[in-house]
Length: 204
Image 1 (cartoon, rainbow, N blue to C red):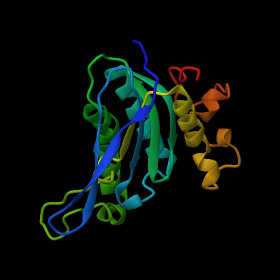
Image 2 (image 1 turned 135 degrees about the vertical axis):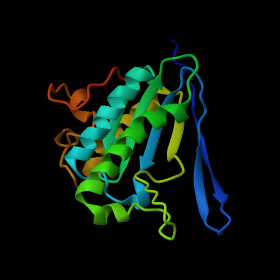
Image 3 (image 1 turned 45 degrees about the horizontal axis):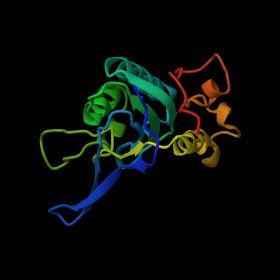
Image 4 (image 1 turned 90 degrees about the horizontal axis):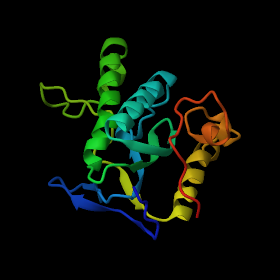
């Protein structure tokens, strides 16, 4: 598939809810040949990805999703409370909503099941409708996060660099390759990586 590189697109809108609060919603542009820079957060910014166990669940879900939806993975970083991904859907027709569901839903289900058994107090932090007898829990922050279409090679490489330096900026690592839960080690040629990438963005 040809990859078009000319600019960058993608947007979010803010909607006022009935209770007066503002909720941001993500709108995806499902254009063939466009890479997608994705960012999504844990519920209320909680560090739900702060454990290696949960990060590994995410890696497994991401690996299954890229096979199921024919995704070319370019870069990623898992932070304690959010995730950045850079990927290129290979099919001529695809739906980012379905791709995101395939990535996020298995992690949420496994985490909530684990908390239900081992950490009931933490599970209560994820409960949405506290006044209702029916318990509903969120692992991911509603709204979908950010989805930016990238059609420019230079911007794609900037995205890769930004992702890899995120743990350094946060003080979680001294060097990008010190953080195991990103693609930085793969780019640096290490063999012991948690998830190999499929390719790198085209040269600018």
